Length: 134
Image (cartoon, rainbow, N blue to C red; front, side, top):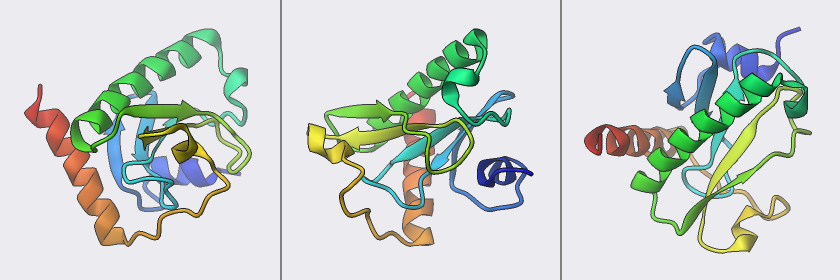
């Protein structure tokens, strides 16, 4: 059975895409901890990130690095934090979260309440900033 994330990649479920290549896909989290909170996933459906083969995992990190640079150009923050939890959806994924302090990455905190329009504007802001700065 396809995961929620595989359905997003296939276009069966809408998302606010940030970046994509032949192996990976990045899109905004619909329950973000911060504006610009992005998920990076392999298109290959693998439950646990450490079950990815070494080359795919390394390449995924390089893709995440590029996405993080895009986020930094668009969203005011000190850093883009990275975390892997892997319990919410059985599909390997990395959270990229714009942060100003360590506690900004605490998943037990209240998530932002955002509309589809706000997510679309954030996605546009990130993709436009990266295009402008190339």
